[in-house]
Image (tube, rainbow, N blue to C red; front, top):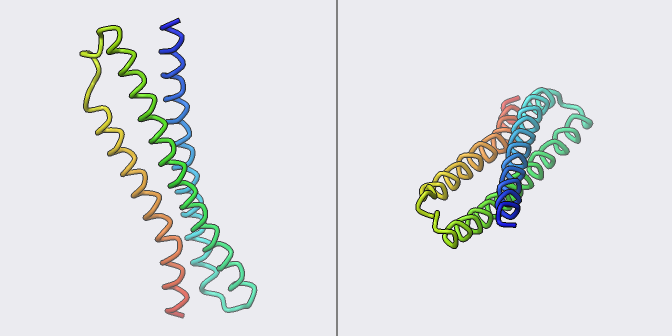
Length: 135
């Protein structure tokens, strides 16, 4: 039974990590596409281009915020799973093999993901606005 619990916790952590990767990649790709489209649209001056510009800006903001929230939830879930694994290891006297810097590394990874998503989202909004103002 103990092996099943251990296996389940490890699988849940792996699934959370895959989810983080999907949200990170989706947000970055979406924001880069928005950056390109809105930069091109900002150069045009029709009423339709303004509407498209606004829709993509709102979409970029929503995508960025959603990805950040998903990453935070994934980070919290992984922390809970790591704590459960550590407790399991302590009860079985194998906790001394647990890498204690794991939590620090995971927090650093989350902060880097947060930075990447935030910067691409910020650029996807700011650059087209600057292009719009310069024309």
